[in-house]
Image (cartoon, rainbow, N blue to C red; front, side):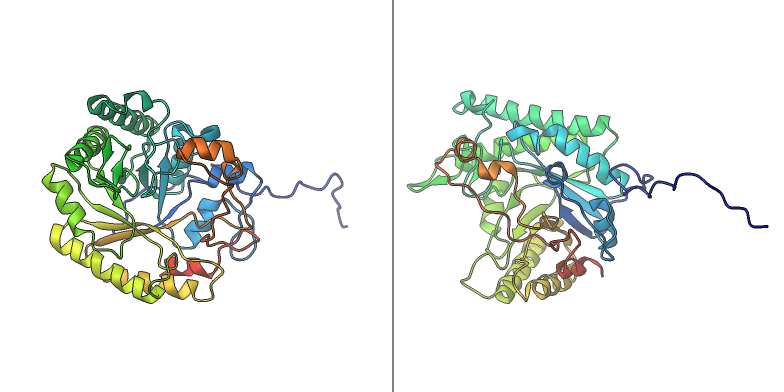
Length: 366
């Protein structure tokens, strides 16, 4: 006799979401194959979903793990637009990285928005002290301590900490600026070193075993002079972080930018004998050679003994998505300190329009 069970059909299996997987142990990899995914929570808020290569919907951390990613980089701003990339947002993503068994790099911008060679804008809460170096150092130390202590209280231990983001011309302008169009600023390197060391010392006080480092753009440039100047001014660093976007400029071919960056990275390691990280890399998904440009760079990079990792910057961006603030001209103008137009979407994401990883991410699988 055939027994047939009657009743409602079972609900379909839920799509895995943040925190649904059992925690994995975190180990600092000998070579970090990383991704900066600081936009993730806003993308999820906007309804973006992610898929594995077979089309299965999954949490981004799981998708990245399948691609070979073993480390996550997260930026932190002081008082950002709607809280995105603020302390609490970063902390939530850091917990997810830990649960996924991925090592963590924390990237302090010491700003309310992106800090880079074109802008190092003092956070609005600190701007009243812009001419008082002692108070600015206190702000840097207090903010660093607050953020890192929150991580420690949550049981998250970063392996690496960046003090400042792309600080070629210093940080927290004008307090820690190194030069203007008129030339070098007197004692600029000393002032910058004091601000940087305030962050370095605060970071080491909370996480003494973390590697704390400065960060410069353009890995292909000769950056030796910068580190010499900062070290002479008393700057302390355990490692070096660099950005590399080989398709962002056109004075040379992408291959030439790669080769020059590799040479510079090797020279920095040979000089300082400390780890060097490419903490930002990106290639243009619309270019037919993008995947090979990244693959060839990573293959050669891993041959350099002193290079200990590479992080793709915001690979999860797809489908023309951009953060809400990019369309808010008034807020962009306030945050950058200069008149702005609406910003266009980031064009160096590494995911397809269905939310699955593109062939660019294959470079992290070996």
